[in-house]
Structures are given as structure tokens and as C-alpha cells.
Length: 190
Image (cartoon, rainbow, N blue to C red; front, side):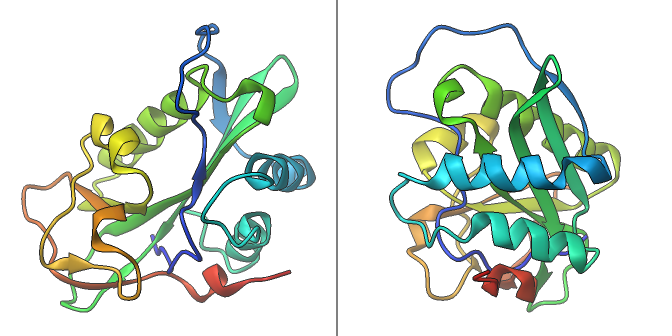
């Protein structure tokens, strides 16, 4: 799996205050027919988010076209897609293998703060572990992602971003070191 350099903070799945918790949504792999709904959801989720280039929907589409979506999971309420998470391979300058990047992760604006993003996170991390991934990186809010086991890891960096927002979780016990590079799809702007 490959993960490319994110444009900015690639999450829009939570708010600073928690709302009522809804029942856990059904989560499944994306289907080809889901692409348009995922793009609309992602654009809406990031429309008012700080620290974003508003290109997240283009990044997901570019990853899909490049065959770099290792995981593309959707959260459903009935037939409606209310959340999405993308996971793609990343490269590490040390040559460490089996590392992935999580993001973008998106939740419908009217459903944020209800646990949908957390459900998608847990499911994506579980699937990575089951697949034998070495670890996962992401760019986002440490207060939110720390609860899933992500930490800032000295020696594992994403050049050009504040170190405190680039976090990782290791599944294999051996931490990668070096500079992380995301797929060129993360440069998509349209």
C-alpha cells in the first residue's frame, strides 16, 4: 500500500464538542458506484474545515485512478454514505516497507461528532493490522488521533509540515525512521 504527501490536515470527522452518539454505522468497502457520492461527501465535509486546500475529493479520485487506494471504506446509514476513509501506501526514505497513510477521512457535516469517524478509524486500522501492515501515518489533530494510538514519533517525519501534526502508529513493533512520502495523487487540485 502506498500513501502520498497530504496537502494539509486530511480529516474532517470530528468537532470540538461531542453530540449524541448514534448507533454504529454499517461499514463496507467502496463500490465503483460510490465514487460520485464519496466525492460529494468529501467536498462537503471539508468545505468549512480549517487547514485545508479543499482538494481532498480530488485526492481520493486521483488515488482511485492510480490504483493506490489500499482501503476505501464507507459508512452507511441505510443506503446513504455518511462517512469515508481512504488509506494508501506511503514510502519511507529508509526503505521501511509496509507503511500506509490514512486520509482523507470525511464525515457528512450534519453527522460529525457522532462517532462515525471513530468507527471508520477503528475499522481501517483493524484491516491494516489484519493485512500485516507495519504501521500507519496521518496528518491531523493530535488530541483526536491520540486516542487511536497515534503518536508523534521522532525520526519519522513528513517534510514541510509541523512535526506535532504528523503522527504514526506501529503495528509490527519496529518503528520506521526517515522522511515519509505520499503518492503524487496528493498533489491533485482538480
